[in-house]
Image (tube, rainbow over all chains, first blue to last red; front, side, top):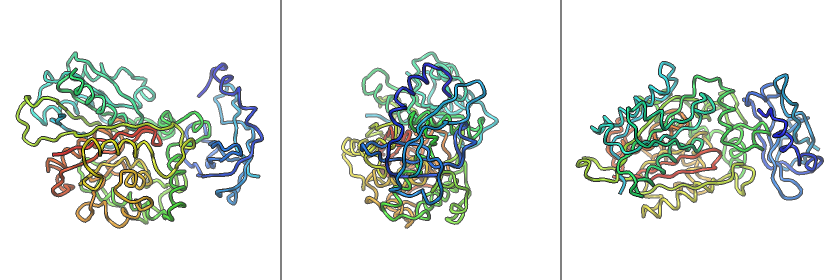
Length: 100
Length: 381
């Protein structure tokens, strides 16, 4: 769990430049037994996305339906609340993917 | 020339009545005893462990195990995720080859079942990448992504993958030290609860406690070795921390690289292997491993297992006679050394009901993370 503001700042420096980028699903799975801080979101899909610039990214798929879970499905990167933090921790936002 | 002297593994499973310290003491003393050795004959200790710092707030394991053995010799803790055991042995071998020490004890140890499942899931992800953790992925998740890719590319069914667990549970049923000693069926695997699609509970290795130790030497003078077992190759390769940064999701290049080097060092071909202990953290792992090691053609690993080609008594290259990680258990830091103990017993003809008849050359395949580190050892009698 990240609690240091400076650590979070360092990690999030580039986040803005990653928003609104398109790509397609290369592989997908549904996580049903997650790590502690993702418990309240399970089950949720995790996808490897082939981005338009040729790079691969890994991320959670949000706003999804069963039919979106297919290889080649177009997705776009969005900024979302990452996970549930303990009450006094910094609220963390991160890149996730949304079906198009 | 590196010879194995003592070799011992504890029972694997939920060992709630024994502390990590007591477990370390038990395994070291028994490894020494198994060959009539004394602690005073050991020049250094190497410990493979992954999680003691994260789960138990206990690092500094080198000194801890030296204290338990009652010695004040050099002692090192080596970490490389689930390949910590194999890496510890590799480093121990290097120290012998360098001439720094002559006889050393290598142990792998892990105590996991004192902690809840979500704590363990979180702790194990320390072996992954930041991107994978931020994506909410887990280790079953990362291997599930490989399974999806593999099944699609080679038209392999979930039932074919389930056959890996069925085989390993059958082998586990012959191993009195295995965590699970009951056979299972394809139907059992198929109806077990989903962990990360398409992987189900019975596709996954369990959370376990356990320890294993070997004593290795570069000296032939310790005493005449009755049934000498030599380590003829010890090779390591690494890869990216993240799965998504790799070219292939259906092959682990670290395994291809390390095993290729190991075969060359040993002067053998993959087909010369009689018995292998494979890092089957998930059913998909063993299917891919048997291809990366050259036992099966690409895309045929799972099918060959389903057809019995890796099963005791009717297979050609027998994989995981111990039951593997799936049935024997997977105390992560101990696994790499347990594999060496199993192959040593196999090559000495002392493996009991799970003996591979006439086994002469054995291989161990120990993998950390999603294939971020692979350690291959080849043993010969």
